[in-house]
Length: 306
Length: 315
Image 1 (spheres, each protein chain N blue to C red):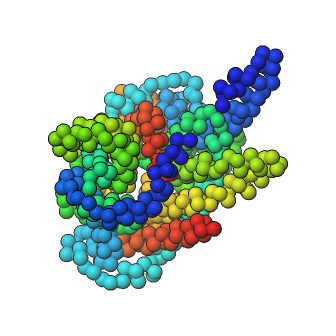
Image 2: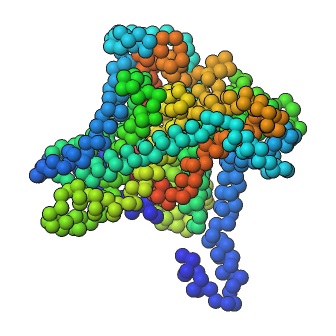
Image 3: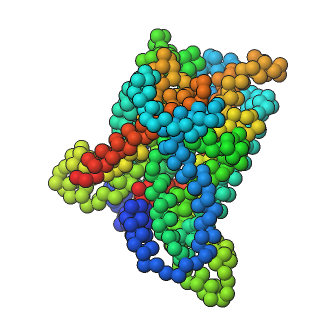
């Protein structure tokens, strides 16, 4: 669209073209959109601003989004005084990365089988998995509590990895679509040359499906990192807790540790809390920013199918 | 747009499923690698996903108390359900949950539809806006909820300090008053879930033919006419989908668990929270009774989805 406008623009009519351009670029809509988005994100902006306020600034300038005096005392306090924070953070990375590995492994193998290999009941199983996804899991949390206790996987990051890794319907679906969109001639010629199916999958098909893998890896990582209710129910031991659940405990105890002499009287508990909330969300936000194209692609494709 | 490319590959899940089963009948040589390749995914799915589904259903008909091992398979017929209908907390929870749903859904429609229409109108930057709009949904739930706890804080919260900045000194105790607690929780829940409905509405709008709008514009239709005569009627199927995906707030648990734990004076004890409390906080840990309540909640939301699909997708 823009190129056609440019080629037709001749010097004497610059003013008129500029007006047309203005109209076509929907400046008004952008302005409304920006105002709406700022309103929606005021809470986050305030939280970020608050994390840079020291005690005096927080109590005198509570509602300010941009503090008058920037202070890093909350960050210093967070990184030095909160003992459990690194443990929770590490557990979150273990769970999220573990889930991602399990999901990518299971879903790409299964997606490949459902798209390329012929076997009895193949499509019945595939459809069964998809349809079962829509049945509500009433009582699922209670049943999980029983199951994980029985398997000795309650209070264990391994249990969480297996559990989150088992959410395969959507990821299998995405991988199957990915493999179906790859031409299968190369694989067929490799088979004729004597390669077995696993080698074909591993050496030829999987590298070509990198796009789909990035999509499901992003979905799996963010889902596992952000889960609350299941983790909260299954984990109550500190050394296995993830940050998404542990953050609540850290916030509840931060007032006690605030008595450590180095930081006494220097910061407000609420401002320190804000800092830790930002810390807990940072990894997923960074990942979301880096992989936005892939994530949105997976999401929109999934949504279109609904 | 990118999202319409894939439609050639065969419509919705349901139609794909049907054609897949038909293909299966045609048969063919069986490849043992197939079973090997699906085994890891299938085993995990069966153990951690399908089994809890069946077990959760069966549990609703038992008097399973977690602290008493012997009650695990103590089937008691419909006793749980008889108890439910005389359970005062359940009945008040049902009222609170339905109130929550009826406040939540219209606001969700207005917010996400408004954003979707705005985004659909821009020619440059749509991708950026889609990204921003979905950002609240990827934030860890606990982070969002605890952020709102800070915002709603009576003395040091953002909202009350802004109000006081405008000279209003008689500020509400958002999470602490019976009148404001439930709406406050709803604001938090809306904030963290409007992203996906917005994307769904956006897809719906992208799929409406531009020619319809052009023809309407030639006939002199105002933007309001275009909205009510073209956009809204053609988005009916999307409305059904958004209802089906959001009716789950009838069992909303997390926001109450983190922010109020049901208070003040049980005014935010929704069904979802009550299930959680019965199962994991109260005395015997009555998993069976909790599963029964949960099953009822699931049936109510399935019924609401079903009705909305019938009404909005068949005309």
